[in-house]
Length: 149
Length: 68
Image (cartoon, rainbow over all chains, first blue to last red):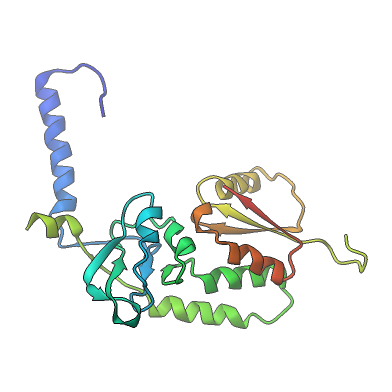
């Protein structure tokens, strides 16, 4: 980011500071990312490339070594550390193979149910919680590190 | 208000970055709005698929609002 005309010494110090800030991210083996990321169930993926085309950040990729539905070669993969969590892919996936963590279909349906029928028992809510626990992932491999090595 | 005395309910799906933030701000400013509007946060309006909107109607909502 450009600030204002400044002395050469000052510019160099600032550049070094920026480089060291970048090194903090690049040197880590694992990155901590937020839980709000899309996850592909590769067993359900038909390899239609809809998510690749729809993603505004170009995150999903096709993995040739992965097996999709009916053991077809190739399935979509979403790198959790890069995913911005907008959920566009989850909404567009025709096979419903993608779920956005913390905003799964079950969770959103439970929210709508709870808001519209506060007087009824909320059995769906428990189901949604269980699914969230099952899919919790703590650390993700750093994608920058992999390409550098 | 419906004929049987129950109130009309509208489910609003609001994008985190704009509409939900606006609703949050409205709450902070203590602005009044009808209690029949129920707000659900979604990460982006892109996340909303047609099944989700139809599910709200199925659950008994009279209208679905998408804001983002």
